[in-house]
Image 1 (cartoon, rainbow, N blue to C red):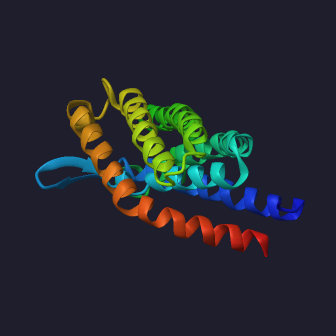
Image 2: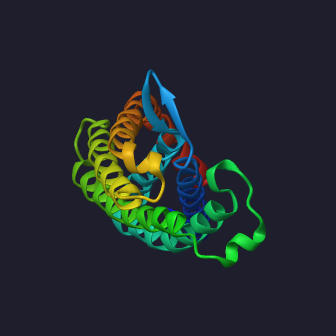
Length: 209
């Protein structure tokens, strides 16, 4: 069992991590790239970190604490996503005066992230919590990554870019969403799942100190 100070410290670290990854991913999704002839965004490489943090939280602290982290993180992440997106739209710094004008394009991205994060993470928690007792340690993080990333990607891209004011994203968002999902799975299953057991052991020892 962890002491109350250890729980508070862990909660602060995990909430900060969630907010950081959400804001970074929402900014990076504005920056499209081409890989092997397919359209995707830099955000595909950062957002899987959120699922890693959520799964480790459920494993160490349980479902209730994981939900608490999500509800604490989502409002600051929504606000910071909008502010950062407006100030650095399309990878270029805009003047501070841009904050005083409503940017509907960035607002849609922020709201889409808010909805996708809540739905995807809550589903991830449900799936992971149901499978965490299985003797095969990799089953829960694998299943939660596959399902959670699928829901999150579909919700986010459909809300953010369907009939968007950005011509490129309006035309290419289904392709970008599909490739993003593929890269998220590749990163999650190829990198995070093998490292999952190592991180779990390390965090349990660290938090107990």
